[in-house]
Image 1 (spheres, rainbow, N blue to C red):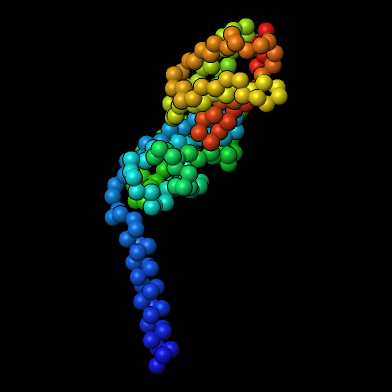
Image 2 (cartoon, helix red, strand yellow; image 1 turned 180 degrees about the horizontal axis):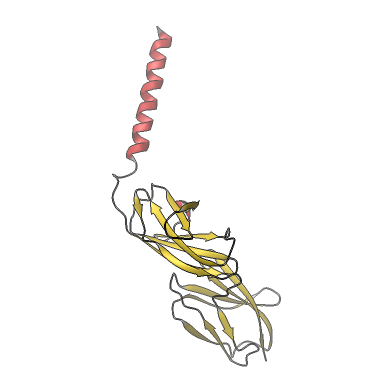
Length: 199
């Protein structure tokens, strides 16, 4: 008799836990998802903007070469979503050419976006190198702003600027002594590193 009562208690607790887990997410609602694509070397960065405050559902990245049949590439970990923006780096591309991407969130699906992928493409141009006072960065931040950090050869941070959102940015580096430096451009999860020289 005691065993039966104990089983009922376990079943009741299990049902209550399941109900709480299911009801912790709001009712299914349509969510707008805007995606943006950039190429970096041998990968494509997929940036998804989610118009929701409820991050309880799965977000899947789909890829196609013909915009008809799509395959699942990966899942955007919603624990990594910051400011309603999630990023996925697709490093599994086999050949150069056109690729189409879609991103889902629950039952919502983004529009397909196409990118022409070329292996070794560098989205950032830094010039002149060597430089005397001004260093120019060319990058079209269509997906998200980027951050710049400059380190000396010992690893000390000597310059930084965050949230750059213009296609051309000129840095006044007159205060830096002549010598070699490492500049890092951070675009979401991707960090591009270059060696620069001030004369």
